[in-house]
Image 1 (cartoon, rainbow, N blue to C red):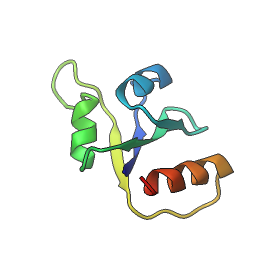
Image 2 (image 1 turned 45 degrees about the horizontal axis):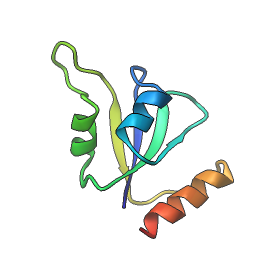
Image 3 (image 1 turned 30 degrees about the horizontal axis):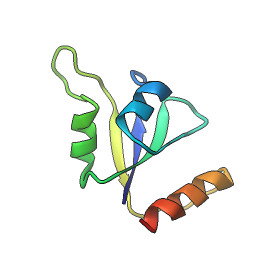
Length: 85
């Protein structure tokens, strides 16, 4: 399973939960960790309608293939579970 960080002020938890079956919201707001079978950050970005044209949303998608840091233990458990899929 591929993991991504999605950051957008134009999305909310409900939209992210609708777009992805497994979402972990970050405390900072407007940022989520998601698991997806989509292979690239571009695929995730396109699925969320991030594009410069009229009506498109703005946001950033970063694929996580290596990570380290201090955060809520539940996030590390979620990442480990997704990695094993």
